[in-house]
Picture 1 (cartoon, helix red, strand yellow):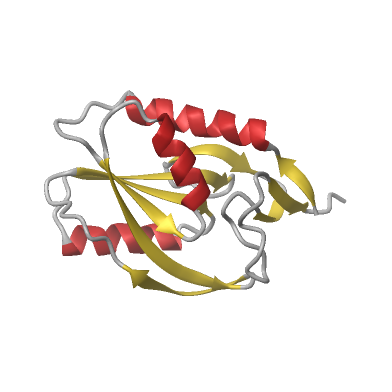
Picture 2: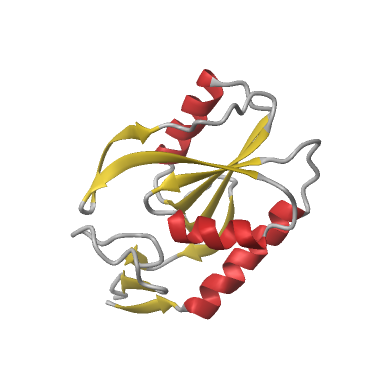
Length: 169
C-alpha cells in the first residue's frame, strides 16, 4: 500500500466537482444525498465548496464484505421529500455501477424527483457511465482512506487515499 492521492489532489478534485454543481441552474435548492458510509468525507468537503443553497440528506447502502461485492442493501433511507426536486447522489466510487443503478431506481420509484444526477469522487476508467467525477482510476486495484474502508473495515479516517496498483508486465 502506498499513498496514491494526497490531500492536495483530493482537494482539487472536490473543488472541480463543486464548481460543476454550482454552475448548474436550478429553480429551487437541490437536494444533496450522501451515500454512507464511504462518501462521508468527500460529501462534507464537497457541500462546503458548493456556492448555492442546498438541502442535505443521507442514505446508507451496503454492497461489499471485504473486497467481495454482494447484493445491495439499503440500510437507511432518505428522510427528505424529493418530489419535483433536482437531486444529486454523492458516492465515493463508481466501480461496477451496481450501487448507483440501485439507488437511482430506488429513489425514482419511491419519489418523483425532477432530476437525478450521480456524482462520484472516483470512477473506474473502464466504466462507461456518464457520471461527473473527480478522479479516474486506472491501475488501482483497491483503494481506501478519505471515507473508504479497507477489507477490515478500517482506514476511513485517513486524509488521503492509499491503494494497490496492478502489476504491469
